[in-house]
Length: 357
Image 1 (spheres, rainbow, N blue to C red):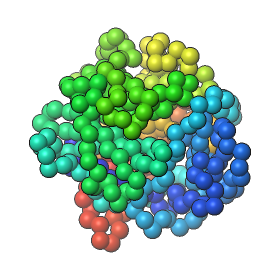
Image 2: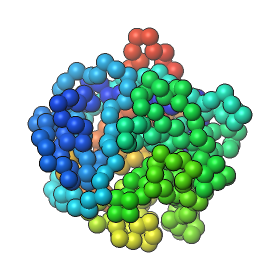
Image 3: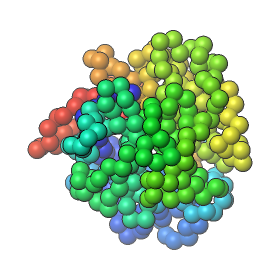
Image 4: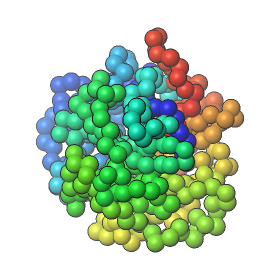
């Protein structure tokens, strides 16, 4: 994790467009549990977000003209039907990517907090509003904040709620992931606090409603202690399939870890992690994200440090969360996202060469 001056959300262009058909609601474009209307993703890739919603991502249309990020999902209903089984090879994704960046969208406020930067955004669209959770950085003092708005044009002026005013409390907190767990009708905010922590809230729009931190483990797992070297245990990411919930994490030392528990037992009962991927320190640094797409494909992103010292993202695919992971765009010359495949449109200053979270 590193401090940057502002949050930017990158809009896909060229080989992977996020332009969506306007005639069908976002939650219906690839179907999903409880949805019975028409769908329109006949020429594209249905990118899985959760059991209740997938997003249609066409591969050949022009990029969007707006610098707004692609629309995200409404949170799921409380239905509990299982997603399709993960059998067979993962569907194909593009093997090269080009991106177009907006300018900074959310920056530190000029207030008594005197922040150096805000970063690590996790975003969900719910009940007509964008809900953003992110990290605050100030002189080795890390925390979390929340903001929301109806339109991205309002993002810069939307007020911050610093989550140390909730049950999350003060102290080291960073790298949030917002997750809705339908079986319990609860939102989970997953973050690092020198352990793998979480807080819950039945109402995402009530930032004071987050519970005090609990941890998935009583201590750093032994396999991480054995491999971490001079690194740090960071960047927890949870994703569930039909029967299991998986927790990914990194050690800033070339290892990506995965552990699991049953859906029924979540958030308890995570087993000893295993090493899901291993590489040199800089080639597999931190900030893993795992997404399901189509019926049986998973996309893994991990942040690396390039030969120029700048951050970039590598990518892999698999037909199972438990791997094996096949490299997709994972080299500096063909990155998932790096300064050499991100364009800054006319009128937008190239305000960074680091493509990290």
